[in-house]
Length: 48
Image (cartoon, rainbow, N blue to C red; front, side, top):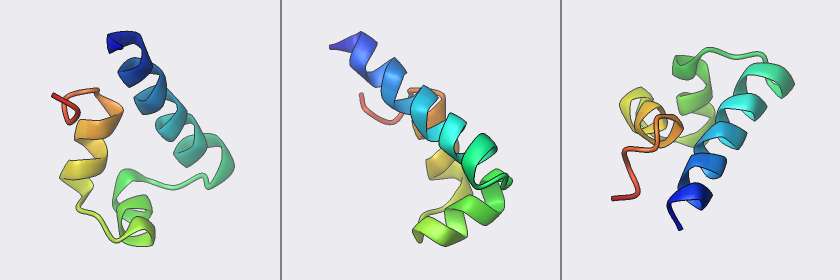
């Protein structure tokens, strides 16, 4: 289960950086989430 959380965060970061070529700030606006929230997901700290 913990591995799944790592994979999810890594995939989101890869999509943001390689597909959208956006900063966390711009990507968070696209997703209607805070920049902090995106960072937590990418660093695997959001899923508890």
